Figure: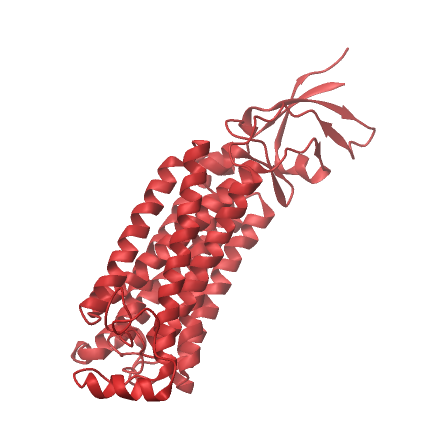
Length: 390
């Protein structure tokens, strides 16, 4: 029998490990204004202001004369430039990950961030080249998922993750709140060629997040993402003001259900564009989605408060929820000003991302510990013998 201390690899806790985390943070932070600028492009109806891709009015994108930077071209072109910033961040993220990160799955996660941003850029380009509105909707929805992916990359390279998770080859094994795998000292039985190592893990502290809380968080993430999809469809099909009053719907509870009712509404609201029955119900569906999001998040808040867990996180998400509802109401009552509507899109993305991070954190902490490390784990650690029998 020998005692083995599995120390944390220097690449994860030293300057190189922190560098990867900081690059991930920068990538996620750069994605937020990109989503806001994408909302401006839609709100200003500037998606086709630059009709070619990957060039811009026949110029290299980085060499477009400033004389072109007016009107809708300004919004579309700056959106493209910000997209390249996120793309460069993703390239740096991937390079740093493959040079410094010892966890194989995290290296591939960084690579997936790069692949996703390339896919997103191609989607945006095809929307212009093919003049397909549906591609613009997909482009908007993928942006939300990409934001969560960058946030996940930042989370798994953070000190919080290293405190709560023990790597096991290509996967990570949660070890509970407060347990630091860098200080785990275990007894190991070595069999001949060291092909098997069994590790006695200290008892895991009772997880603060139970299965019910994890499910509630996951359900909230799904509901929020679904709501953002409905919002993207509504924006691109210009249905944001199909119901111009709030909280009622043309003074009633439900939207019209017949073409005759729609025609009557259009005739009596001559100061507004004519809307179809489908647009009205799309706008109403977005309101129902907002109600479902509120119920889902309030459920998470109540469960967290009762368990006295993640209080800081739920306070932040609660603030975002209030801000999002307020922005949504203002968007309708102020007749959809571009800045308010775009901020509504961006805060929605931020709400999704923060709820997703809460879900991942709760899921990780709620997992049971593992008592067996594979041979790959030995290669993933700096092994230091602390005692050898005579």
